Structures are given as structure tokens and as C-alpha cells.
Length: 180
Picture 1 (cartoon, rainbow, N blue to C red):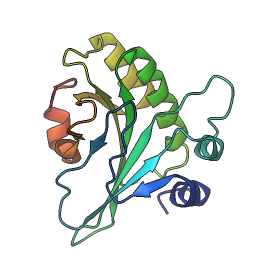
Picture 2: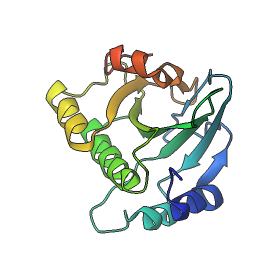
Picture 3: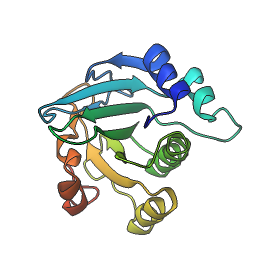
């Protein structure tokens, strides 16, 4: 089983928002517009005391990101693959978003098998010039072993589309901080 049973139970019973729902946080949201055929997309609210307790983030000083989008893909042959998008909605203070995503990624990684599971961290910001210094992005990738992207969103408007990040080759080739 790729996901710890207690974690899965907490996600489904306590944090589930719906299939590919886009509930705004700070007026911003993200979704998978074009999921591949044979995929299921589920959205969860993470910044909640029950999730924090389930993954051990209730310790003093630990931070949590806003959302998780889980994409389950069952190919015609082989085992299912899981992609976890950890999402933090931010208007400002992008360095704080890195701390929130990093703590959540580390806690989640401890509860996942290392098989066919991928974690991608995404900051959704309403600032067209949102960026983080390259050394900060590189340090985050190295420390947490997670890809990190910054996407633009429109407050109370069109959700940031994360579909392009589902293709492993495309997400590696796509530059970080590209504004969609």
C-alpha cells in the first residue's frame, strides 16, 4: 500500500473537499484542468488540526500547506501511480510558503512508500512578479527531495492550472517560477 492507512483515513474522512474541487484560500485556488484518461483527481484541505495530528505536524514550530491534490493514475499495464501536489496559496511572504511546503512534504514522505509516488510542491501567488531566489529554490529541492514551482493565480478568478506538471518529463524541463 503506497499510503499509510491512518493518513489515508484522515484524508478521506476529515480533509476531503471533493473530486478536483477548487475551494479558494486567500482568494486563490489551483486545480488539474486536463487530467489524463484513466486518472482520478481528489482535493483535500490540509491546514487542519486533524491532518496536522495525523502526520505529526502538531509539534511546536511545524507548518502545514493549504491543500493537497492527489492524482491517481491507473495505466493499462502496471501498477497505479500517485502524484501528490502540495499547494500553498500566497499573496506575499513566499519564503514562508517554502517552510510550509517543506514541513508538509517531509511529514507526508515519511508516510508514503517510495515506489510509484511523486510529490510536487506548488506556490500559487497573485503577484505576476512572484519569484524566489534560485538558491532558495535549489536548497528546497535538495533538502526536501521535492520539485518546487511558482504559479500565478487570479484572486477570485481563474484557478491556476497544474495539468502541465503531471508529465514527469515536462515538469523537469519546465522552468521553475514560470507564470501560467
